[in-house]
Length: 413
Image (cartoon, rainbow, N blue to C red; front, side, top):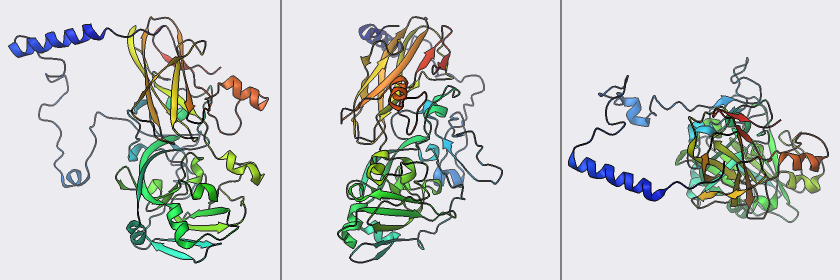
């Protein structure tokens, strides 16, 4: 079960031998160079007007979102509830727009908004009320930033079998828009304006209360996602992105921001936060979190040997500074490799080289962020709350059990 680095020199030697053989034209075609059974040498027809205009993924790529939380989507009223992203198929850190998770607590239909008619009003305790058109917003200085969004209901339990079920209510995207601080400076926040209330366009009105300190820091009024306009399920044409905070606060279909002098218990907040306004802001932030996406529940290792363990880490407290992996159920820990440069409040890809010897193993990962916060075990969380299970937001360690036959299972007892 221990860590064993593959023999890189032998690997390169085999590669050089293959290259030499190919140069002589004396070897059999490499795997994948001859048509497999059922494979068409003519290929698929992607020449239609529609596919030229927007494109389509290969028919062999089947990653898809699934309903989450025990409620079908669409339900009997044709409304969408929670829909989880397929983290088990993810590579890198960016979630494609079409696979980004969808979260809603209000069950309303997705609004069909003409961006030419859409307006954003900022009012309340300001020097002057302003109403912005989409064109006016896009004329202002913009920023592009990588951030995750995560639903507070993104939690594991023993009944979940796959990482899509345990952690699929988080996604990471590249967001483009105007910093909310730019707009607030334009309207002029008055003394005593210590909170904002943001509201969307939904049929069932919801709103979110946010502290002014966060609003003036890094909240983004976003109109683009992954290089294109935000998709309707994600709030087209305008949404808030509140980095590192509970996902429900990133209000979609944004139409109004009011500057106020106190915390308001809104529809969005009820049931998600403690009622004490003094610690309401502290309840928002997502703690350091990570999960192994391969191998993970429902997957199958074909046999013993080398595997690259891979997963995602993130934190609402800033950038990921360290990820550790255990192959013995948390008895010992070894540093994983962080792939690329960690961004603040964004998914970070990590990997770990592991040689499996065929005996039962338990894989875990834990994240440490730039604040020094360390992802807790489920036992530590239970001790903190003084009861079994997890209350509030769940950032506890997710264990995966590798059976001797190579099957992978949720190891939460």
